[in-house]
Length: 304
Image (cartoon, rainbow, N blue to C red; front, side):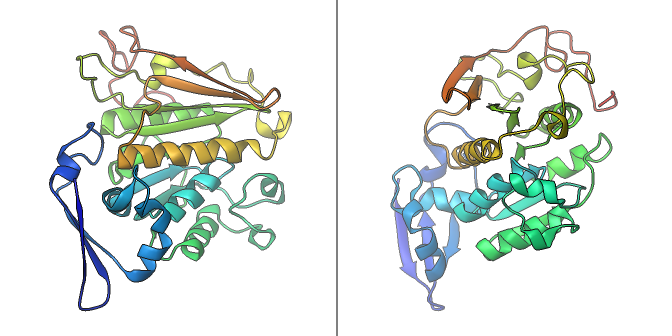
């Protein structure tokens, strides 16, 4: 693996990635990327300098980040740090889908917004914040509610999805849609003082031929309506979504760049009350309704 750098006539550096940058190592989303060159100007080189000197990222990894398209579902407590850290990392295109407006009570934890944003569309405010942080990032805003009718079309436009939605219906819709669209998914959830995070690549198999688990292998069905109180009813520790959202961004970056061991088949659980982090392993369930031996979910026509 090597990186060749040269100065172009316009003063930008051309980082030329050798073919084996993409063809060797563990298989991941960008393992077959055909685009072997990318342009980083002098300001980008300075902006991403700490990545470029990092062994786990380097020039090849930064090029993958710039070429990546990531869809963030929800611009709330989880989506806010995801968007900010992925923008800071240099992800080339960020899509954000949310149909809500900013309210005063959001500001306790949704750090991408300011007081002056109250009443404005969340996706518009998030887009402005991303552009202000990193003008090299392209932002695509989708001010709509994600539904069974539009989920596949939206998700198909992106390479990877980060789901920070705040309700079970959307969470299961996104996970099912990512399976049918064959897209990797990083998904997190937060409670009052606890949270969890996992990555799902249910459309792929492992090296030994074993299928990767779906989200439904971990949680087969959403809990009955009313059994889990909403944030407005139960409250939430404001800094907690920031922790989980930052870890989501880290996991997305890992999936794009391809370093270390990710959370496919593992659930990271955080208890903020006792500051404990634990990891639970889970496997493909042959009885799961999505990819099991006798699947009952074959499209998104069901109830979400």
